[in-house]
Structure formats: structure tokens, C-alpha cells
Length: 491
Image (tube, rainbow, N blue to C red; front, side, top):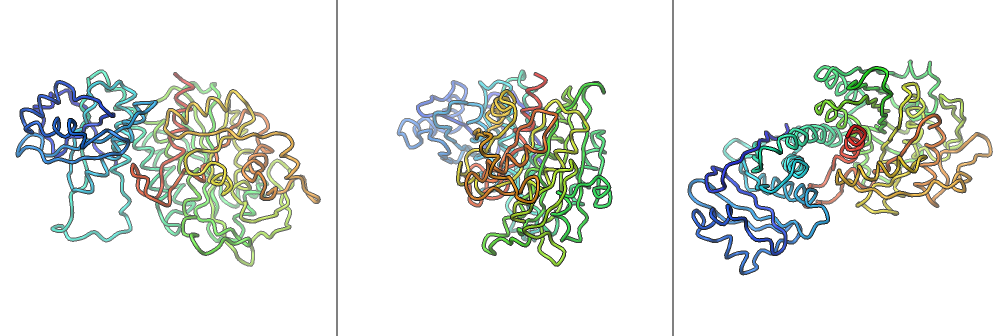
């Protein structure tokens, strides 16, 4: 469950807290209130530590000191470095602090953000919750006497004018928690039906409308591109549509689309066994849509949003689609299957065609689509592609605000030549060269009628190593980008 978050305006010297977190930049002095706390309760230990440069404020630097017997029991200094955006830096520091709190076993902390505006408080709230988040559903817990406490409550010390930021932060935290939990579930637990259950839960709590297409319904719609991926699995594939109505019915919606491959073996073009277990994360685009719909509904944004999720598994069997097969998408376009491991684009093709009926003003899709994007951009940036230059810039700005930065790659006409087929209208891969770009071009073939941006989050939706601010596993990307884009449309 997300943290219980609250705001307080107490003087630091009057606090009762298990852990006081102070985020500092290099050479940043303590505020007068913190200096008073240090002198009266802590014997000046913080001031001496800073004066001796035992703590220098570098990014992610941590220094823990014991506090008083009453009042402030412990103090954690966290460095923010020299950030270009202090609010984003505070989010990271808050996440680092929450992870530390869980490590030492305290159930509450107070984060000092005395000079923070509403945006900074929002980022602190999100950071605290993301750092405290754990997935323990499948683990046997130790006996009560051996367990450390887990962080349950966090107070942000800031002015009462930032309450709006706290509410927004809580909404985002709930969205990220849903996205990360779905992503962390094993492939035998998170199935297409799990997405349906989650969507129905959202609908029940927030008054959303959910439409679900199964295999039979998709066959009637002629969704041969999506269905060819699902033809080897006994699990019923699902195309799920979630509608949030925050504006008048005649206002056209924003569209969010997510790839939901609950597990991807590669199919007949099977992946190597090593590291295949990470392919449970091939549904992070869909998880991001689900998390975004939760946050948007909690924020009561005055906008209409349609989320579409394509959920299935990609398996090898006697009924699996084969390299060389030709399938027909719901648009009538035929596709030659070159590599069955290029399956996400096949699912998204029919999802992108389906959302057109809602007459969206813009559509953003997100998918862990290509390994090639990791070669291009590593694990620090989302690959961004689009058919509308203005929309691309809008999405890039949203990603920056959400601390999910992206980088635009070109969709020049010349790249489209690589997906021409000798036997069909197009083929599903264009070879190793420019692999992310040709995948983007494939998706573009199904986006007629609306401005569109594609986010390739294969390098950023999850991490195979500890990120300091977050543990290895799901990061929640692209939840924040989706939410910030929608918020940007109503600001």
C-alpha cells in the first residue's frame, strides 16, 4: 500500500519523529530553524559534520547520525548535488531517504522541505512513496520478532500553501504503485485477466467505463495482427479500453495505449534462456497506462482520456505464428512476419487502429518495444518518435517534468523502405539497422487520423541493477509521462 503522507508546519525543534531527513546541496547552510534544532537537541553534531566536510552534499550522498532520546531520534542528511531542477532532485533524495528508512527499520519519517513550492512537495511525496515501495506478495515473511519495521508514514515539513502539491503527489504515488506492482508480478500471476481485474477495480472506485474484447470479439473485428501473437497461448488475449470522463461528452479525448505482453518468450523466434525471466516486464507500457488512469482519476482532471491496453503472452507451440506467415490487421493491411519476437508492434497495430473510433485529439503509446533502443540510448532516456513535431515536443516536456526524460529519434521516409515486403504490404522487422526507428515506422502505419507519439521504454521501464533511488525491478515509467502530458493539456 502507498505511504500515509501528510503535511506539517511544525518547527523542527518541536518534532516527534523517528527519522528527520534533511536534503542539502553542496555548501548549502542549515536554515535557522534547523540550526536551532541542531544546537538544542543534537549538540551541534550536524553543524560540525558539515563544517568538517564529512558531508558534502553530492547527489545520493548519505550521512546518518543518532539524535536525541526524545523528539528527533535520528537524522539523515541526503545530498542533492547541483541540480538543474531542484524539485526533481528532491524527489530523488526523498526516494533515497525512504529506502534508508526501510533498511534501518523505522515506521515514520519527516522530510524537511521548508522552502518548497507545491511542485517540489509533489515530487517529494512521489519520491517518498516510490522509495518505500516493496513487492512482498510472494515472499514468506520472517517471524514477528525478527522483522524490521517498514516505513508506513511520512510527514513533509512545508508551508500549508503546498497542500495541492501533496494531493497531486499522493495521486501519482498511487498510480506508480499500481504500475510497479503489475510489472513486478511473475508471468504466471500477472495474466491478461489480471489487467481486466485491475481495470474493473479502477472503474468501481472512480466511476470509469471499461470495455473488454476477448479472442472471439477480436476475431469479429478482424484483428489478425494482435491475434497472431496470441494464437499459441491458451490464455484468452484481452484488448481493454478504459474511459475517464472529466470533461463534457462532446470534448474529444486524449488517447493512451500500452503494450501488455505478460510474458514474451519470443515465440518460434525464441529468445536465449539467459535473462529470459526479465521478460515478465514486457507489459510495462500497459502497466503505465493503468497507473496513469488511476492518477488522472484521483486528480479529477477536467479532460477526457481513453486508455487502451493489449494484453497477451507470446509463446512457442504447434499453433504459433511462424516466420514467413502473412497476417491481416483490422485496417486491412497485410503483414509478413519476419521475426515472431517482434510481437509488441503486432499487438499495438490493432490497438492503435481500435482507438481511432474515439476520435482522439492525440495518442501516445508506450511499449518495451526494442532492445535496439537500449543500444541507442542506454537506460537513461526514453526513445521518442512521432508523426507531429509539436506533439513530440509536448511529450518531451512532459517526460522532463516527470523525471522520465526522453530523446527524439527520426522517422524519415527513407527508413520506411526497410519494412517493405515482397509478399505483403509491410513486414514486421526491418533488420538490425535502425531497429527502433523501423519499429516506430511500423506503428506509424496504423495511426492515420490523429497525431501520434510512440515511447520506447525498453531501457527505462525496469532495471536489472540497483539504481540507488530505486531497487532493481520496475521504475514505473511511463506512468509519469502519461500523467504529465494529460495535465499539460488542461493547465
